[in-house]
Every structure is written in structure tokens, then in C-alpha cells.
Length: 436
Image (tube, rainbow, N blue to C red; front, side, top):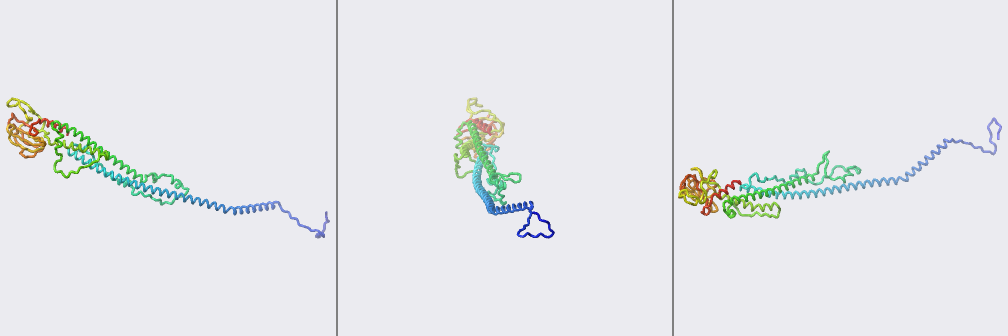
């Protein structure tokens, strides 16, 4: 319905209510909806955070607790490893000390054996059986403590670390239980730990003692072989005399000079080991050889004249130079110039030094085992009755006194006053001279 325009203010119609109409833009509506959505989302997020905050904290606490327990477990494991290493080090120390004691005992035994080997070598050298060139050398004795000191180790107690414990996830901590303590690293060089150095040093010492023990046993065996060869040669040479050398050797005296003292037998148990068994077998052979050599030194085996032996008449039956009839020649004649020195053929005592019938000027010497020697036709007697002589002592000079056709030496060898062929003793002496 239309109303006519008017010039004044419109007056309300009686009984009618008039409302204002507002117009809202679309952008305003969208902004309001967006604000409402953001408010709702923030309220929801705040509510979720409030609801889930306690559970997150619990999980964080549980995680840290787990890490702490794992760290403490790893530290406990490392401490157990340290304790185990310390215990092993103490056991290793006890083992090393026991081994050092064992090596010290073997060292003392080695020195005792070496003194025996040296004494035997000196005895054989003094007896002329072994030359000094073949004598066993005395090895340098190394004390068991020397290699231990040389290794630079004075204690086997474990060294506790002073550095801070590495972090739980560090490679050093993760690999500590997997690595073996075989070497220590210093810069770029790897060094053996003290226990390894000591073990190597003790092993070297053990090897040295074993080698020295073997050398001592080899020296004894070499002595045994030398003695066996000497015994065989002595028996062969002395057999030329026709005497019972074993019987005479048993009666001969080996000791010379001022020696003596109570007899204390040296006991050796052959079942102890090869060294003792060899030494036990060696002793009777040494005694036998020494007796044979002593017997050889008592028999008239030397030549009464210097130089080559030149017989002008042998022992036995011959044509007498004066009667031209068969006769017994009780000695041998040495061709020599007048005045040549005549020497004793063995140690002994002069029992005759005078003119004696057909012997002319004669010297008779008494030796061991009932043996005597006579030196006749001398131009001069240079010994006196009762005089002690040694092998090589000049007792007179060559001449032609008594029943003689010219200058020469008549030499006799007698056993219990019965003449025997001197050539047997001279041959034995020649063989022994060749052995020396």
C-alpha cells in the first residue's frame, strides 16, 4: 500500500509497532564462525593437554628411571670386571711367584750340577785324560729375579682407573666388556702388559735353564766317551807289558802329594734323572782310568836314553860276544856314545850304585809292584843309594866298564828279581806317548 507523501514527520499509526531492520555482511559471519572454531579448538587442545599431562610426565620419569637403572647395571658390571681382573691378577701373581720359586730351585740344582761337572773336568785335566780345550765351559747363571726386574714390573696389583667413567652410550663403555686386555695402546704403538712381559722373561729363563741342563748332560756324556776311549787305549798299551794290569791297577795308589781326610762317600741316586744316572755310571770309569794312568806312571815305560832307540843287542838267547857260545842276555843294549846321559825310566829309589862284576858301574832302582831296573857299564855313576828319583832323572853316563866290548848301555827290567824283556815296557811306553 502506498501513502501520499507528506511534508512533516510521519506520525505512527495508531495500534501498529514498528521494528528496525539490521543487515549483517557475509564476511562478518565468516569471521565469527572462524573465531568460534579457533576458540573451540583451543579449548579442546587445552583440555587434551590437561588430561594427558600426567601420563606424559609418568612416561618421561619411567624412561629416565630405566636409563638410570641401565647405567647403574653397567657400572656394576664394570666393577665386577675390575674385581675379576684384580682377582685374576692376584692369582697370576701367585702363579708367577710359584714359578719363580721353581726356577730358583732349578737354578740352585743347576749350580750344584755345574760344580760337579767342573770338578770332574778339573780332575780329568789334572790326570791328563782331557785337554783344557775340551773342558765344559761354565755358563753364566741368571737368577730368576733378573728377568722379572728387567721386564720393569715390580707389582702385579691392578691399577684402578682415575679417569671419569664414560657416558652410557659412548663406544668405550659399550665395547669395554668385549675387548680382551692382551695389549695396551700408547699412541700408535702397542705394548705388552706387565704380566705378559714377565711371562715372556720367565719363559726365556726356563728355556735357558733347560738348555744349560742339557749342555751339562752332554758334557758328562762326552766325558764318558772320552774315558771309555782312554780306558780302552790304556788297557791296550799296558797289555804289551804282559802284566795283569787290572790287579796291579787295583793295588796302585792314585793320590799324590799332601791329600787326605775322612772318607765320606758321595751318594747318587741313578733313578733321579739322566744326569744322575750318567754321573753314577761315570764315577767307576773315572776311577778305573785314573788307576790305569797311575799304574802307567809307576811302570818303567820311558826310554833310558834320549832320542831314537837303537838296539845293539836284544833280550833273550844270543851268542856271547866273548866266548862265542850260546848265552842268555837278560837285558837290551843301547848303542850310544860314551858320556851320554842315562835316565831313570820310572820313579823309584836307588838301591844299588856301585861297581858290580860284569855289570861294571851299575845303578839299580826299585820301583812299585816289585819291579826294578838296572843300568850298567856306566862311565860315571851320578846317583847314590837311598836317593829318590823321578822319571827322567839322570843317574849316570854311558861307558864301557865291566864285561863290555865298547861304549853302550845295558838296561834290564826285573819283576821280583826275575829278568823280563824290557822291550815290552818300551813298546807300551811308545803307545802311551802316541796317545798323548
